Image (cartoon, rainbow, N blue to C red; front, side):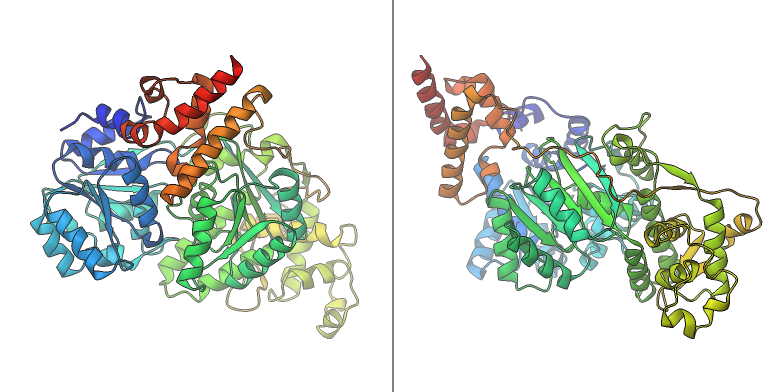
Length: 603
């Protein structure tokens, strides 16, 4: 058995553990169970990979990501780790070879899809092998009504019953208290030590804007800030994914679609291009992204409202895994709320589930309409604490204006009541502004006392008022009908004149504080740029030769460290962050040659 520190340094090329990694590793090496909540990019995989290498036997990793298993295994093999996978993509002879390697003790890590793991044949195989541990990755998939639910995860409690002596670790980047409790219950981890690492991702700038020609808003964002950089654009529907990808391609972006309705071959091709090529924009439903290791995703943009803060945090967390500045942009409108509530009302869940989903959506709406620091509220949702405003979200950088909207709110609520609580936003605004359109006349709403009492506000200003009243819980949306607005009990004090209401003022012409468009490597000095480009070219050549994404060879962080340290010997290169024994042996000579050539030219 090697020590964890030896494995960290010589296999993975890192010189010290981060945060609670070492404690988690030692817990598993000691044979104990663990639940790990750690933000994306925080180093979760090391928490089970190192114990699997330190303990006798093979570490079994349960992963829902069949499409990514091969990439994950290839990356481990580049490190000199004996890794394999079992899933439905393998031909039968390859399955037999992998099973034989497991039984012969020739594998350090074996990745298995949950639907294969729970088969009797696989369980019989595992009983014959020496097992180091079970790692249940993306453990939030066990939450029955979660945003990435996988039915096969519900049967993973059998690991506790079938292999009681094998330590288990469940890992996820995102889980609120309800999901956390469900993971513990369903996986029988009541005795597991819990490691809740801080959720904060300070390098991500959170921005939320109301929709005002969302295509124009997205195009401005991409052209102004990220014209040639990798990112993800999330849409609610498959149709919108394809239309948005086609439109962005027409605007000169390297944009690809991804959703569950595409053929497996096309999904695999597009995902591979996103991982291997520079500057690809993936337009996707939430079917894309879980487990994506690409470190240089510079932005995540949502063109529709996520259904919960948990889903929003999980998806935005795919940006900036390398710790460099990244942006999470969300565009939303009241039509998103109507659409999501209609989806919830037709779901298969019971009433308790629907109430829970409604509460989660309400929390998401609350985050959208904040006038204070978004990051503080986001972290508080997960039980984390940020004592001071973050200074890196839109409400911190450009504090929103507020106004005393009490009278306008009373007018709006009265109009909703007098029109029968069955009409949507557009009709309510038409009545308030005294429109003479056919629908208002036909319904007789031009005879109401609220007809024309709101001419002092524009159409957009009234829409903002109604949107914020829904977000604050003063109005509800009829999910089973056509999105009609309805009063809630909480609006009574306002109508009785007992409560005043301040709302945020939407100023649609104001742009949020944005980062100027720049290359990710813009901070590299001009004198160093030729060597930087030569190191990148060397990495690109090796990646093509080995059939892996460039970051599997070395991350940008490692290339930057090479640029700074200018190692000339194998021993000096081994001191560079991210260079372990295997990568030194495989790639060291190539990079040392590049550095030595430039040193010779400079002398």
